[in-house]
Length: 205
Length: 210
Length: 126
Image (cartoon, rainbow over all chains, first blue to last red; front, side, top):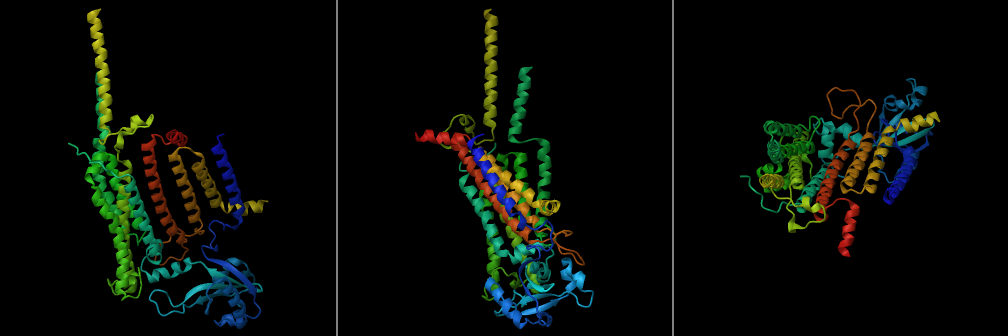
């Protein structure tokens, strides 16, 4: 075998083994609760008596200490309001909800919203869903929503466009598309500079 | 017999080198406007269904490529001027950035670049966004169409070897002429004809001699 | 053992397919000596990455992300589609410039096999 093929094969085997090593973090195909689709887990804390405050839509005092510390040390924005979400609908796939709550005490799931502290802007909404707090057994699990959730829920109302891909591409991420157009413009200019038709073109008689 | 077959081969190969088969020409001339109409549909209906600026621009460019494949690169190159194409390169980017700047101006300097809600085409903030998106997609479509066409024509055009530099075996093929390959065919035909004449002349001389 | 197989291998078959394609493209970029084959390897590599990234956004039982009035189902995640649209255009731009460079090299050296080009460069210096 030639030397180049042997070196290439070594690289390929090394990369392949790296990919196999990483494979446990990849979510399953078609998972509706995976990180890019729904939420990603941040941390979990003890749920000792914090539900009462959460039910009333206020962040409880002790939760404030714990939650604020943990959220701040990870560098996320602080939640300021809590909105209650119907427990069964969201947390169905977990398995714990079916066991305990039979209608009396539904497993609670709360959505924490953040409110931007700046002045009124036309485009950014007054509040935005950011965290998802769920009670599992004795602990409260805190998740963070994926960015797509906002595009999918509020998109058809803020822009009257049915196609989700188009309004994300041209409206929410319009600046990236401007850069994209510049990229393809640069490619055209580069090919033209390299291979210009410099000679006079012959006219067919 | 040999002469007739080889001369027919010469003619048909000469005709194909220029790219002029009658059926393909007629069908292409019919199809190109419909392809362009479909491309415009895909660009404008990008908001209501699958599609958008990039997809429609590529379909538009592919109609020019179809014309070049069917008619020969020389004829197509004479028809689509390069300077007009270069103007379209930047027109699309101007439209996109222009819409963004217009939004900054129309929002009274509140620094809302590319926030289409401020263009006063209708009375609703949301409807303005949809119309601004359509404008922007048209700009993208123009640029992509011009770039795809230009890349194809630049890559497929037969280049004159500048300086006549030949390197090894590639030199014989490297000597291309700016016409559509006709020179090579004619040269080979001429060589074949000369060889045949030389052979026949030798036979006649042998008959006369012997 | 069976559980591990089902959970790790069969549930993530999009990942394994795209890894195989990625490694094929990577091998072609390094080991082949024809310049055009290297460009083809680059394209295969890019396509494998696009496949993997879009397949991360799929949801079981979801339909295309176009909002229709009165539909009570799940839409597929549209964000990977958007990002890959940009990436495809970047791939086209890269391939176009690479092919034009190959044309220029053919005109200069008369060949597009890498060992012969290196030979000609060495002869040119010597």
